[in-house]
Image 1: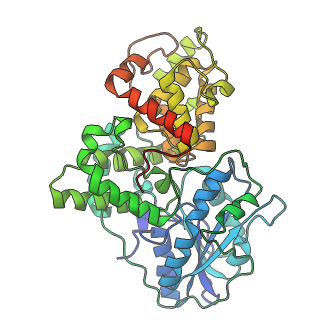
Image 2: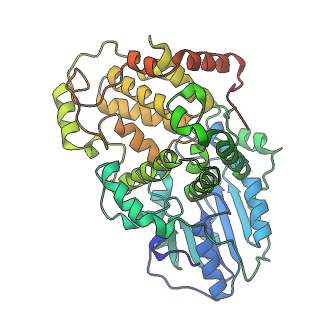
Image 3: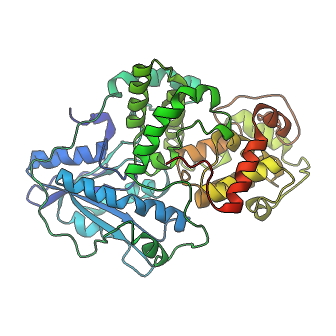
Length: 470
């Protein structure tokens, strides 16, 4: 089955050059071989033109928040990518830009020998900028392909107000796209020489590659999550075998660890939401389980976040909130904050609130906060910050620097939800106005916060994640 045209955007007017050496696939967001519509489309083009496919992947030292944690996770995915591309008959060129003085990219050199360029359609971070700037700089067609969402983003032509407005549209379109992508089948394997800039990445040399890169070395790799396709597959299998059956009951109890923990792998494109959803659906059917709660989070809520960032220019700005939220913040902007914490105090988890401190430490240590406690984390930051936009900026900064699932559509949406995005007006109160409030007492009544706090303290003391399962 061909890649659905709704997934494909041609971003320039150039024509194909079939006399050149290959079709170039630039892996920016979806760093995987399996179930990758962008790579599939590159193979389609190459097969039609009688050419091989070359995959180019780069990791630079100058992206915002570049640090040991993010670099390590990215590099841990490279060996398996190389192995699977070779098995599929696709060439692979990997470039690690180690210093600011190093060449920024080899994309343009590779594009000069390409009949066409295919890349990922991803609506935030550096990929959004690349896809706005690069098409005009190459002399061949430049295609951006949506392999991040199950229902193609292009089919939702306007910004949706909330989950209840996007849900019926997603459910109506879902049957058409909820099917396993084809297996890669290249007609002409890549036989070209490996480019001189290519960096061979192995499990053994990753620590040295990270040490030699000009990035922030103060944020260590996560002891909880190892990057790469195989790790994602193992986590998915563990979730299906152990947690799906109890997900609805325990998902909002952080100490129970009933979630899939796949958000870092979804963010870096090492596994696709389509693969996860199909796996969940098939497992649930086999064992007579009800997967609706998990699929709601994975499909409706996640694709609502992609819809939001796709339709706004600066997704981190409060100007994107509904009018009722902006108005209530204007009315309460001068309300007294007591206590009032500085960003430095909050980053160091130095507040009076033991539960909040544990959530911040989870971010620092694990590189991820459980979704339920992340809501509480965000609401308290709103309450303790001098300004609303300052609170947003701090939350985005923490996700960007420490979270393996930060810099993502879900990041912006979950942060702005704390200020009224995709929500409704509630009862009036100081500082929050009509924005939904979460109290520490209520949160601790609903969850076993004592067990969670003890777990994070043990993690902090030992440096080992007591919840790690694979």
